[in-house]
Length: 259
Image (cartoon, one colour):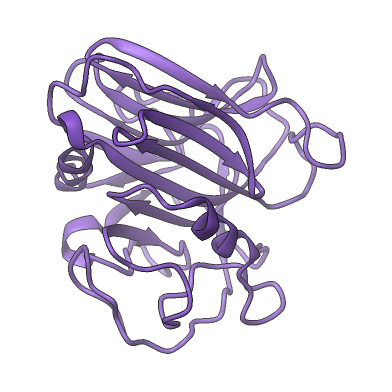
């Protein structure tokens, strides 16, 4: 039922999108293994930097910034961070290589012109890095919000820590809101592929990455995929389970709200 290997294309049955996790913004998160951080670094190292993070998110009313995903080296000079910035009221994707940082901003309002905070809507968030295109970008709901040149110099040390729902190094900036279907690729998804994921839906309310269909986004270089439907304390990855499965910390609430 589950794939194995970063480039595998598993043949599995569709799994109905049943649950998500809601995080309290105080102490709940998911710790991911150091070896996954190293795997991400291998895809973003030096001249071959390629990376995509795709997820669904709902942010609650917040008073401080909350981290969706962060991977970082031992120093603060190399890191990738996706967060909701409280004082600016927007999603942000920050790339920092070799001590130089560039930020993509997501804007302060959703498609209806309202704040993202506590709007009760699942939003598809995608951030990409491509050294081949010399670009990083932030997408929200199939709209490219900002695209910029990625920082120079290149990544100059391996990533060693990563997590979902908190700053993996400082152990702060906890996420307050809901998360679902977090996928990590060591390649840049194309614009068309981002649209496929956003518009996915084998059944009503089932906007999840489809590992079963050959007409969906290719699993090439998919190194981790968290559906966040786990029953215990392990956040199982549907791909590379031995490499990528993490630990759920302080029991974020399981719920039936899904994209």
